[in-house]
Length: 501
Image (cartoon, rainbow, N blue to C red; front, side, top):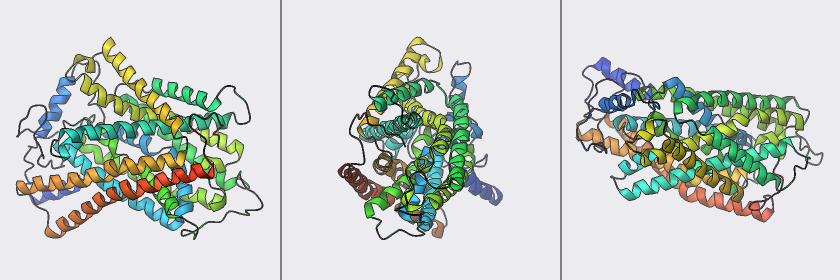
């Protein structure tokens, strides 16, 4: 880190000013670190160099067996790819079938743009406050240091991550049931498969640093890309969808929403797309383990461009060949049996890894507060490893229970998006912008009047969008679950019913 003081003084020359403006979007050494909104929590100093905080964190780990600030921007990009290039991509064809192809593609691009912007705001906040380790620290800072804000954020943080783990337990059981479809394994098959997936995920979660997890994440992202590409190709070359019937006829594609599209279905489709893009809850944890946090936008831009291309191509092509009549979610269900098993199997590393990544983020949150400034954090001690393994096991047991209580894919995505993403995807970062804007003005740093007005309107819209998710989105999600139960299309709690695609 360069020696940039807490005051966030303006660049001295026009050339540096241009470099700083570019670095504020794309990252790099010229990134200008602005003023804090609150003093550092650890030492209470009001004037501390943000670069000194990062330097002291790295120096404190020198010689330790377990070092955390070790990630390059390339390793962080691997973490982002593994988080975003995931099974939820296979819900995009269904979302497009509800919204219509053109609105679906537009929503994909717009949501990606909003998430990119809010992620940059989050990064700028973390540059000003490099001591924060997770979104809970940020939540307390944003809401004027109130203790209730920390506890409320912590509760949502743990629940959100555990819901994502539950989703991967659910999908893992779907995969195993799909592979043995038609064969009777014995006992309560779906629950047994869920237990097996939970146990495997717990073991894979055990690495302590994101540097190690990024290596696993790289291969998970590669396998996922192969999986969705194979599914897309197979959908195009198979004679007809697996669930084809003569009564429904050939697949039809809607350019715009059909007359039968309900508000609840439209919201569920919108929330599914949003959920796949919104992952800011993990970003503070990733940034906290980067050797140079100023490089984070490089990882972010690389991942965002890949997301837009992959999501749009996979969603559009699969929808074009399955149409409104034969689309399923995940879209593997529209493939003939052999194609389904081949493409679905390449998704296994991500089914396992992504849940593990969120479990690891939760584990860090608990471990760093349990053993703050303790050797159990940075040395290989029996107590440190036992606590780490126990914390992870607890998160996976809770995830298993949730997966058996809410055993349906689309509705679980919609619930998670409306209840949690409203805060971690929108509201937090709109508030962060206004807090940083005020801190800038206090030291005399101002944007041009036009740019300032546009940013104020944009961030007010982002906050209102989060409120919309929380209110209207939650209503639509709950109503969708009720409709599914009334229609008898989902199994009951802790059901032994085969949930194969």
